[in-house]
Image (cartoon, rainbow, N blue to C red; front, side, top):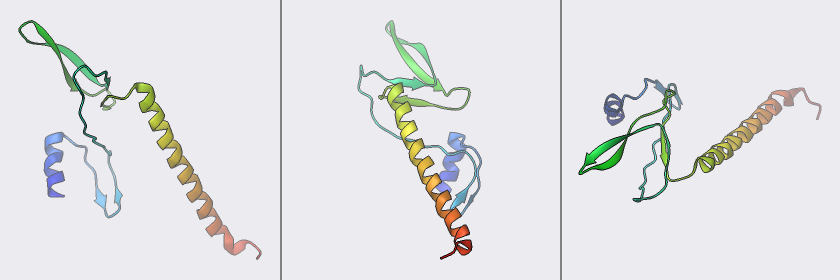
Length: 113
């Protein structure tokens, strides 16, 4: 936990409060992988062209969007959107199931057996 607090200062992570299983604040997820030279990538963020020497050009990825989002992926935008939708539907279905179970447990004493 101390390592996370130390890295929060370095990475400029948002403030939050952890109380057991409950936490507040913005959540971030970091996934690490490799990109091969010449591979097509999708970038949601800001990239700028820069000189790398010997008349070569390169790109520097240096800022997230104005909303704070940043994605660099070897998957296409359509694939990333579809993956987001699929996981969102799973969470929606799980939430609906929890509502049904909660309502059933609340109403069960009042139902005739």
